[in-house]
Structures are given as structure tokens and as C-alpha cells.
Amino acid sequence: MRRAVPIPLSSTALADQVQPLFAGFEARFTAAPAETAFHVAGTDFLCRSADASYSEILVRVLPVAVPSAAPQVRVLVDLCDTPLSLGWPRWSEPYFREREVEAALFATPFRLHFHDQTDFWQVFDRGLNCGLQLMRKAAGYPDWDTGSPLRNLIHWALAEQGGGLVHAGSLGLGERAVLLAGTGGSGKSGTVLAGLLHGLTSLGDDYVAITTKSGIRAHRAFNSLKQDPGGFARLGLTGRVRGKAALNWQGKHQFTFDHLGVPSQPDSLPVTALCLPHVATAARTTFAPVSAREAFLALAPSGVAQIPSARAETFRLCAALSRDLPAYRVALGTDPAEIAAAFAAFLDGTAP
Image: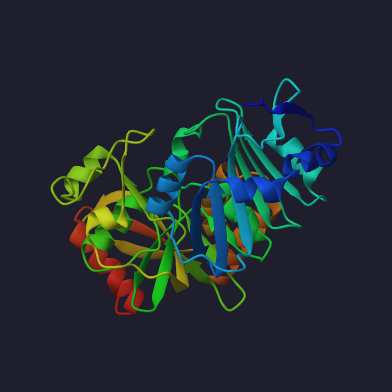
């Protein structure tokens, strides 16, 4: 098997260096043996993968769909030594600096991310609506990728339409939803699970897709859920979760909506508010209005840090959400049923 010839990349004239990575895309895409179609935020994606085991992750975690005859976005997951691989990127400078790379590609059709510890690359051509995920070997992805696979590529594709992914959870009741924003440990995932276990719905506990063309609407992007062992026990999930809920790279149980055994969740819901939960161990859960600035600071930084190469688009999206949605600081109680009831009352307008 012929080895791919390295393609050196640097922050100088980077767009000209990235273009050859897409050489032979059509043939490589057609030859990849495993196919997964999924639908996020009104967009049809078709992914073909040279790593069949990676397609199993996609089927488990993404909102799979019937393949479209004309998908808006195509993604190829390729391996270094596949027969048609023409070249492999190699960063030739001592360090890969995300912001310098983003600035170098800002006015070009390309978005690029490199995880140097695993030699893992993601590249998106905005003109062609085609993405590449390049892995040195099968299962050669970063530890966090199993919970939100293709995350950067999905975000870059949706950003072209004025939307994108935000680092937030969600809870819904009927035809309305709230977003839950905050740093790790603020209680987002626990709040989502408390709601799910007591009759509310959710579009996700860590990332949701947002569109704004016809009002602010949240869409399910990933079916994965997670919870630390302490919360897992407090919520009574030890005997409830069907199948395995293995510990992930953060030492948290990772599982899906299906494992939880809840009814089918909605694909999308209109968003009525932005909520900033925090673990207050209060006697009861309460909501207090906060400023748009505080909401923005809770929502934007973590998303920008975790989804690179489209910082301007991410900031604009988070600014629109913070400006156009009422925001509330939520002091969480200790009883999951009470937390769920408080959010239900907030969502249906009966909260005191």
C-alpha cells in the first residue's frame, strides 16, 4: 500500500497549502466503505468513512436520517494509508496556534483545526460544502470526540447559514425550550437529566444547534448525555440506564437518550429564554433575571474555546442569543423532581 506524501503546512500562504488536501475528494469519498447520513438544523449531511468503527459512533450519537439524493454537506473521514490518500498534512512550524491559523484563513474558503497529540485534522471547504476529517489510524480521534463527533465540521457548515453549535444544554416542555449555559460544573447536565427523568424533553446536555432565520430555534445535534458518578447515583441512574454507561475521558458516565429509556425527543424547539444554572443546594429552585452581558459571558467563552476557527461567527451567534432572549440566573435546589417541576412551571408560565 502506497503511503501518503506529507503536505507541509504553515501559517504563511496557508490557503494554497490546504487546497491540495481536497485533491481527489470525489474518488476518495466514493471509495470510503462506510456511509452515515444525518440531519441537523435543517441541513442534510452525508459522511463516508474509511474507518467502519467510526461510523458506528456516528450512528449511535448523531441524529441519523435517510440519505438525501443531494446532501448539502459531505464529509470524508479518511485514514493516512488508505489506497487513494494523496497527501497528509504536516504542520511545519514549532507550534500550531489556533488564532494565527484562523486569521490566515479568515478571507479564504477554508476552516482548519489540528490536534497535534493525535495527528487529527479537520478541514472544511466553505465553497464546496465539503469537510475532511483525517486520522492517522482507525479510532485515531481525541478522547472527547465520541460524545460529539464531527463537532467542528458541523459547526462550520451551519455557520455558513447564520447558525451553528452553542455550548449549552436544553430543556423543553410542549413547544418551547430554554437553553442552559455555564461553565463545567455549573449543573447543566444534571439539570437536563433531572428534567428528562421527570417528564421534560431535551435537545442535548452539552451542545445544541441554533438557527435564527425564523426566530431562535434549537435543534438536536447529538444524542449523547453525560454525568459524573456522584450525580449518576443521586439521579438513580445506576439501575435505570440500559446498556453500558462507560466512563469517558473526564471520568463521567457517557450514554445516550436511548440508554436512558425516555420517549423519543424532539428534533427542534423554539427557544424562549437563556438560563444560567448554578449548584446552590437551595431549598428550592429559583429564577432571577440577569443582564444580557452576564448571559453572553456565560454562553460565549466556552463555545469559542471548544469550537475553533470560526470565532467571529460564534461570537455573533452568542451575542444574538444574549441580546434577543431574556436571561435568568437559576439557583438549583437539591431534589431532581423539584428542579424539573420548577423548570416546567417556568416553561409553561405558571412559575411564581
